[in-house]
Length: 135
Image (cartoon, rainbow, N blue to C red; front, side, top):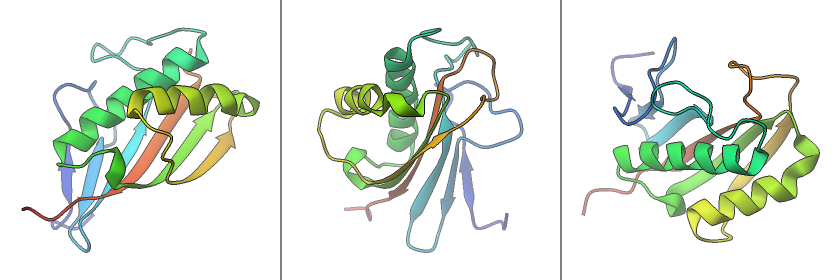
């Protein structure tokens, strides 16, 4: 990545081994937020075996990242969901709506995967957000 891209790792999120939680490109002020999972700050899995709780935890981690760049759920333009349980999209959607407090959904793709980077994880969600100009 060029020196113009800002890489941000909010201290409230778990350490990022081999990636940044957030990459902000200056053109158009777009934030590319890395896939967030149900990992707590101590790297433990939240909600083992519970897709709804893991989705809520993933979304709470995304919310931390959005705040770190001055964005909100309304600024999210794209969401990609990777899950080992893709047919449970109703559970995922309900949990997403619970955390974001609305039924507003940006462009989204849900992909079924055979596994994620840490044993016990059922879902990973990444988003792209437009960062509003300073007021």
